[in-house]
Length: 265
Image (cartoon, rainbow, N blue to C red; front, side, top):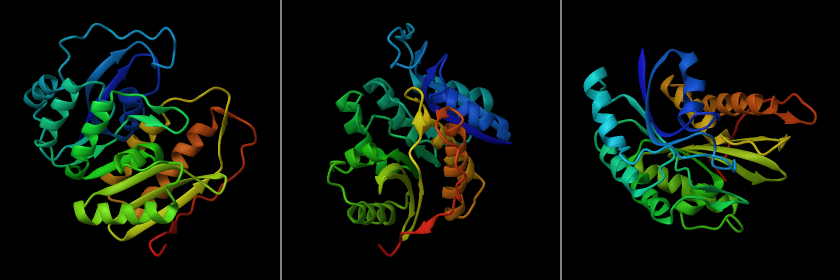
């Protein structure tokens, strides 16, 4: 079985962070190794969320313990997500130099919410994005990493930036939830190859937390399966959209999940 190392938040009662990754990946026959960067009773959006006393929580120490105990290897697939402080950031930097297959989800903010992590940590992500194999970021996060504003970041410029970055760093980039013609556009780029797929907006009963974490876990799965790029985008979008639709209100319209090439735009 393939090993997956997941380094992100551990939230006891919500489907986010490590819990989201475990939910999506454990049923797909992986050995799942969880490294918490923070431990919370619930998502921070809940007023009564409590951060458990983990002053000595050091992802680097946990990583080394797991590596010795379970004989983890340098080519084991590694997901890096929510990084709450500089201690975790320093650990992440060390781990990046030890693991060969890194998927970075730079959890930091969203449209309508803005930046919700320490600005020093958000800027830290800028220093490591060229060192990872894969990136899964929402539109706000990708814009921040490129010093752009979501208000005037046109699709043409976005695609140009993606291709330039991907070719230069040999990184596959998945950008989620780009507002496009009153729909949501997901984009997957590897070098000059760019695919896009749209879905309608989903009207949630309450604000849903964890869609990005779930999407990143699915992205990891389909990448590990070595599917063609177009198929990866179609499968991830179909699976996350179907999952989210169950938690929404309004019509459950059937959608054909077929990606289109954006390489020539």
